[in-house]
Image: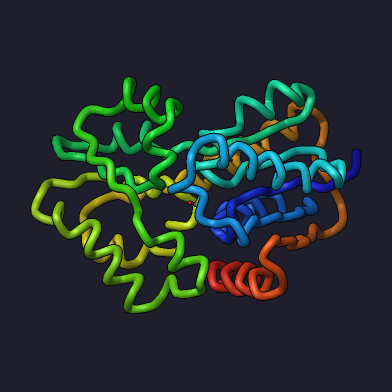
Amino acid sequence: MNDLIGFFDSGVGGISVLHTARRLLPNEHFLFYGDNKNAPYGPRPLEEIRRLSAAGIAKLLERDVKAVVIACNTATSAYAEIIRAQRPELPIVGMEPALKPAHFARHGGQVIVLATDATLRLSKFERLMAQYGSDVICVVGEGLVELVESGRSRSPEARAQVEKLLKPYRDSQIDAIVLGCTHFPFLREPVARLFPRAQIFDGLDGTAQRLKSLLEERGLRSGGAEGSVEYQSSGGDKSIRLMRALMEELDS
Ligand code: DGL
């Protein structure tokens, strides 16, 4: 085992999670692998998402990482239980839409969960809905992952697509919006503009905190020297350039 923490996403979305984790754990060394060539995962059948997630996470395991963060709600829903059963000794942090805090932030109104098709249709979310699903509107973020993956998260097309998906609910009392896909924090601004009174939940802090406590519990924290990030992608240099650009965007 070495000192690396592996991050996996179907593409660049996990950069939003990595950015939060880096702030919290500045001395850690991170390896980020995005399967950009195969993104989006959301519209794919379960078995395909499992196969692709297994292959992507295997890239991290080849490097003997000390922990894995599945920085993707979709891959977590499809594959986290399987990899946890295969590697019980390895700290694995997954993600799920932050519906629980959003549920408690309501004051009489509704919650919108914006996520991928797969996240909303798989059983992990069904279980979450059974507990916190009253007054919830589920919206599939159709086309949004593609916009972020092509570097257009700040474009007029992205704004127009967010409006197309969410405008129908603008006249309802929406108290909270859950960004249930790690690509969507890059679209936070057009979402917030449509619902200025709603609280937005992205689950990024909770995931980073969970990673920190798992590392601490197991005595795996790195100390001393400044941390680092290494980027890898099935999509080649263009995808790696986008990862770096999004990281810089969040830093600024
Ligand atoms: N970033 C991912 C998530 O959190 C998946 C996007 C996709 O590939 O569809 O769900």
